[in-house]
Structure formats: C-alpha cells, structure tokens
Amino acid sequence: MEIDKFWTRGNLKERINDALSDSDLNKSNLKIEDLHPIDQYHARGIAATRDLAEKVSIKENETIIDVGCGLAGPARFFADKFKCNVVGVDITPAFIEVGNDFNKRTNMHDKVSLHVTDGKSLPFENNQFDAAISQHVTMNVENRELFFTEIFRVLKKDTFFAFSEHGLGPKGTPYFPLPWADDEKMSFLLDPEKTIELLKEIGFKSISFMETGEKYMEGYEKSIKTNSSSKKPVLGMHVIGGPTMYDRQKNSMLSIKEKRTLPFEIICFKN
Image 1 (cartoon, rainbow, N blue to C red):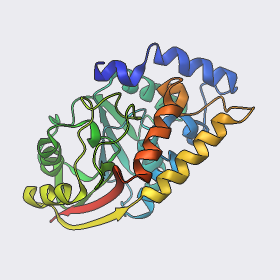
Image 2 (cartoon, rainbow, N blue to C red; image 1 turned 60 degrees about the horizontal axis):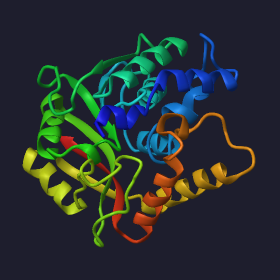
Image 3 (cartoon, rainbow, N blue to C red; image 1 turned 90 degrees about the vertical axis):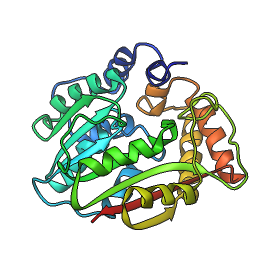
Image 4 (cartoon, rainbow, N blue to C red; image 1 turned 90 degrees about the horizontal axis):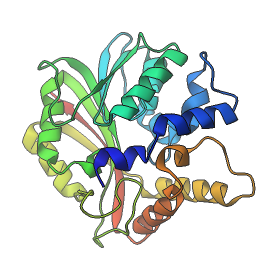
C-alpha cells in the first residue's frame, strides 16, 4: 500500500466531517481542545504531546518546525502553550488540507502554517528555526540519516530537536500490522543505540534518552478498552486509521510487552 493511501484510507475529509457532525463539532469556531481526540494522531495522543512539551522550553514568538505534523494537532498545542509560531510539514496532502481547515476553525491560522513536503528534503534555509519536534514519524523513514541531517541543517545554533518513536527492541521483529505500517516493507525501526549514534555523527549534542514503553502500553490498553465498551467514542484515532486501528494497536502493545519494539523520547541539541 502506498504511504498516502495507508494514512488516509479512503475519503479522510468525509469521515472527519461525519465524525465532527455526530459530535456536534462541525462548526467554524472550535477550541483546540475540542479536536484533541482526533488531531493528536500518534500513540498516546494528547498525553504524549503534553509530556514532550513539558520537557522543553520555547520562547514567545519563536518559530519551531514540526516534521511529520499530521493533522497539526501538536503544532496547534505548542503554538498555544508557548505563544510561538509553528511550521508544520507532512508528506500526506490530505493531512495538510484538514490541518489547514482545523487551523481556521480554531483561529490558529496566524500561528501555524502547514506545507506538503518530505522531511528528507525540507524547503527551508539553513539555521532558520528555533526548535524542532517530531512525533512517531521516523518509523516510516528508511533514510534516517538524511531525515536527521535535514532537521540539523534548518535549526539555529543552541536549539533543540525533541522527538518520539518506536525503536527496535532487543527481541526483534514486531507483530504486523501496526499503527504505522501494514507490513515490514513500510517499517524501518532502529534500535535506540543506533539512533543515538546517528544523531552524534550528524552533530547533535547533549542527547537525553527516555524509555516510554510502560506509558504506551497503558495508553493502548485504555484505547482498546474504550473501543470494546458498549458506547464507543465518536471521535478518536479510528476516524483517521479506520476500523483496523484497534487491532493494530493490540499488535503494537504486544510488541512492546515482548520487547520487540521499544518506544522512547529523545531531546538533543545543535550547539
């Protein structure tokens, strides 16, 4: 399956509009919190975004880049929390289209700008951004060195790159399909040691590493339990990921439990 089709799974915009209508949220003026159940399209959702934001410091009116921004939920959260500007990029055009619509509905269009582009070829000047973030994107990136190098290039000196991903665990191959890949042809996991080594080779310094597997298993358990209840939520990751999302989450949870994958966060600096 092509990467764009994998993430959109049919008429994404129609599914989102239907879900918003069923939730009485299909209107022009929304709070960013209204969209959290649907626009934080990564493991653990808004909880993961809040955790990452609590570990970093961004000054008012600085401009950061979110590489692999999806529907731009994290970008809006960061822009609102830090009163900063966020440039979001994603390879999936439908995500950017919906993200721009959400920016208008939440009155965040002046703070968050979105672009369709590949993270391995960023259309920005050297030393342009005050920080970079990326959540659960790199598992789909085969050329991790080029991805990290491009982020390093567009960052100013004395700025950070904060990201989260599922790394390869000590027991090896995970169970497919997964939230980010239907099979191993779409998944390019690296063990944490290799990821840290690569970041050092590129020039990142002061690298901090944190395992997050327990948090992600708890998040998956909560999501799966909610889906199994008699009253399923109208808004949720299933709107974007389709009806197989919860089965893919089960595989991800089992892969973490058996140490086939190892979720983690890294914060590193360009000095």
